[in-house]
Image (cartoon, rainbow, N blue to C red):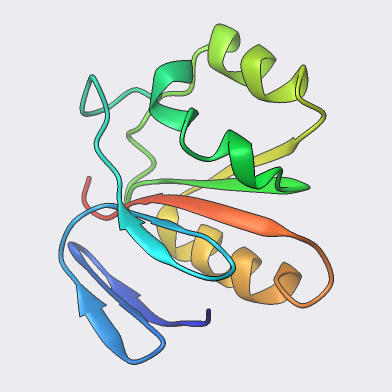
Amino acid sequence: MTINDYSFGRIVIDGKTYASDVIVFPERIMNWWRQTGHSVAAVDLEEIMPDRPEVLIVGTGAYGAVDIPPETRDYVATRKIEMIALPTAEACDRYNQLKERRRVVAALHLTC
């Protein structure tokens, strides 16, 4: 999967446009729904864990408004997964940089 373009509320992955938050796996894309819109709880990441990524990139929105509480960071760290949290434009760039070298999953909030 390659992220071709991102702008507020819109992302293009492998030529297909999405208008809602997504999780980008190496082989597929799924919609990403969170319990709370601007916070990431451990339960919001449960569907990622069976894929055992080396790196989880979290796109925190165009303006970085999404919070990742310490308990969520601990949940990821205890599974030996490196978490990188960045505003979504930067998260997309980082995903594209790392995807060829490491097993990466990106959970991307597309607005705020």
